[in-house]
Length: 396
Ligand code: PMP
Image 1: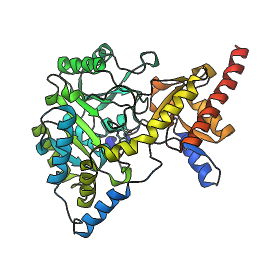
Image 2 (image 1 turned 180 degrees about the horizontal axis):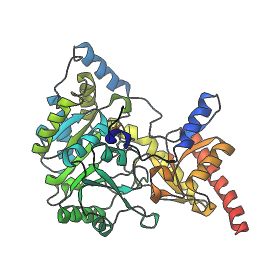
Image 3 (image 1 turned 60 degrees about the vertical axis):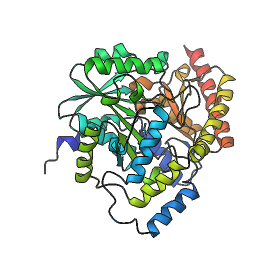
């Protein structure tokens, strides 16, 4: 039987550098001790106080259908949070609660892309981006950023490929690069969006993980509130990846349509999860600071280790739970280096190539194991790279 192109073309096909991740997983299940620095999953679980709020809510009976747009309490809480952080007036009518940020990314693209439209995204990118755009029937068009620009996108490069585009997807703080976009970068992006009449889909799921600089939401920039859809999530900020709770924030008319979409797709998010999320967000910065703290510490540790050598380059690690390391001095691709590292030292990292061609010759290291093992793994990575780079230099 024939299947739709939309589903069969969701992923691009071909090797995408994820082999090393699956190989590491197989090694673990075969009983090998592998140091996994691959995916963005915290090494702690959801805080017991959040689980208590979840349990209480469920026991009080919030286990039936919840309001499709989200509970009033959570929509109000998310609106107040965004307003407090950005100064942009925001009410519950600007908020749709979704089952996680991924569902919010998909909903945002359904809202603005028709089949055949072009949706833009920046390379390197979070793995699901092109598939999300293709999943709504649009053409996913990548814009390369460069290591030389520290992966800050340039407005003129976006403008150069914007013909036929209706949307631009950005992510700051960024996965996979760990870069936080400067105000100047965002101003340039906003200018192109206004000039080209683009919707800006702003993935801000790492907004509580900023180590250097400031997180600026482009929704705050002149004339951008009406053309920006912000994607947020409880996953990273509150170690609630499995709870599947996120949101889209945008203009009221867009949210009204998205509620319609939710009615016909997800039918909302469980009430007890939303009550737990409301509890967590209303705890102020306490819980999110606590969850960000280990990454802040490990990032400082990494800066120390990397500055003591000069083979491996560190892309400015300004936010999120990852380090992007430049291993081009070894002469190897990110994929070849990651495979050799797994074989030689049983350390699993993601090849930069898994996140697009712009991150070739890099590896992404998730800071998701305890400080001691993390520091030691990073030192091993540097020593291994130095060894290979030495041989490479001697041979060439
Ligand atoms: N955006 C980015 C950049 C991410 O890294 C992730 C998860 N790794 C998501 C969105 C989706 O997260 P979730 O669906 O768990 O909210």
